[in-house]
Image (cartoon, rainbow, N blue to C red):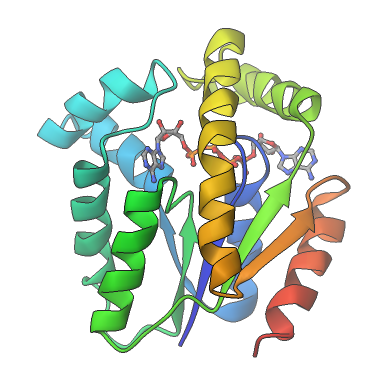
Length: 190
Ligand code: B4P
């Protein structure tokens, strides 16, 4: 079983690259952003609560995200592995993931961080806003999301660096070029 953590700022291409990784490696996509958006569109209690945070560009509270991830994770029997897309985003979430995987005799194989300069992130997300109209893809909210990422990223990187799992990836270029870099890094761990 191979478990990949895909990390990076908003708009770095986590969702985009996850789609290609699922196809190539047959993994299960566990995107906390996607699950939260689905909770919002279904009008669940969690969705109503999460919306208030997401619309402001803030992170959803750890306890809610952790419970949601665990539920999704345990829905699958005998998976080839998971792509954790956008999770963990805090140290508490990272410790939780390590604990739950260890309990099941599993581990994170690699943590990939997509590095993209801020001006490019803003450009990509504003472009996405024109197509998808996501409520959190407004300039001021994008800037807040990037700021939150920057506040958390060093400690998360350090967490995985200590476990020898941290691999930075240049997130600039075409989707295929970036995918190639990611595959080289993953294949080196297999
Ligand atoms: P996410 O859904 O994770 O959203 P994201 O960071 O904006 O997306 P991503 O990096 O996947 O970007 P994408 O590939 O789509 O989170 C949304 C919110 O949910 C968070 O702000 C938070 O509130 C909440 N949340 C989620 N997880 C949480 C957690 N664990 N704890 C607490 N709260 C949590 O790419 C963006 C755009 O760029 C796309 O339009 C794409 O087409 C384009 N693009 C991609 N690659 C490109 C390339 N190489 N060149 C040019 N454009 C590219």
